[in-house]
Image (tube, rainbow, N blue to C red; front, side, top):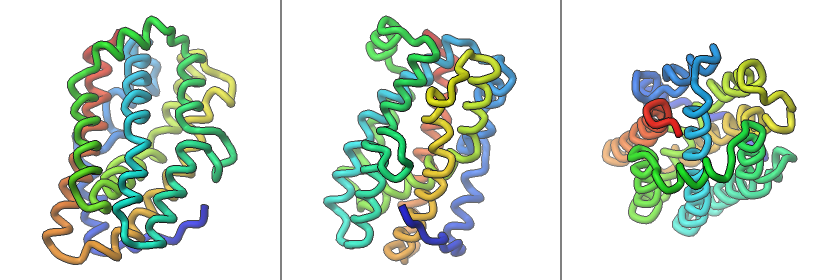
Length: 237
């Protein structure tokens, strides 16, 4: 998937600077730092993975909602490409990203009992994230949801998914590269998604009011992803 260099305008520079604060910057969460040292309990790691899977499974179809609301032909193409990568792994030459995450979960030793237990008792943070993404996709301008996902979440992935992969190898017994593909493929794929998002959004976000709406959504989703890590530590299995 071809991407353009993102236009680092004043707005996007400020947006990224605002992400690098406590409660929004995922790589600095104590969960990720403890994971790197093997200090995260296996039960906490399993809950994080299960809740991540459940939330992403609900979020992927929302690309279709945003696609249908986008009036820009080039924008629709980029949104569609993002969806195809999520569902099929076409551009990365892998498989659907949920398939890759389930493979990692199996290698980690997550059982059907674990899946059922967490699915029946989702943390408040995960439920809030699912509600937020659904509401933003269905009720706001297409570029608000797309910005939240592309900048608030995906653009941060290259900063910590490598840590998760390495920790899994060193501390949690997941050593086969095919079982770690979910983490390794996202490092390059999501870096591209962040650039694509900024290129598209820059064509539509022109007023202070639009900037404020995008900023709020980006920071809200970044905070919710951060909070999901906190919930995994608190809840376990």
